Length: 77
Image 1 (spheres, helix red, strand yellow):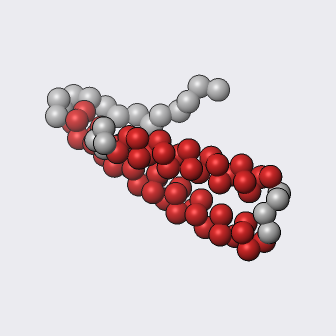
Image 2 (cartoon, rainbow, N blue to C red):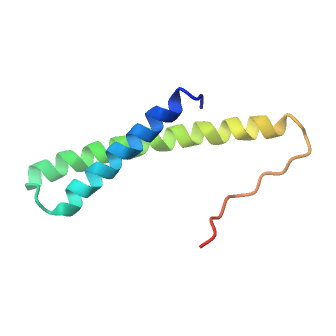
């Protein structure tokens, strides 16, 4: 993922957050809620694809040294 994609990713995450807020407000009609939910699913998939691409790039970059070992990320709670 290039630096050009980062603002796009961040923008999509911001859009997704706004959609969630609209859904949680409870003020949307059923039709509007379904359309908003659909938009959220689309944005989620686009963001997941960007994250998958970034992970692949990291794996390639770490693999260039040959001795690195990737471990799954587990955030501290």
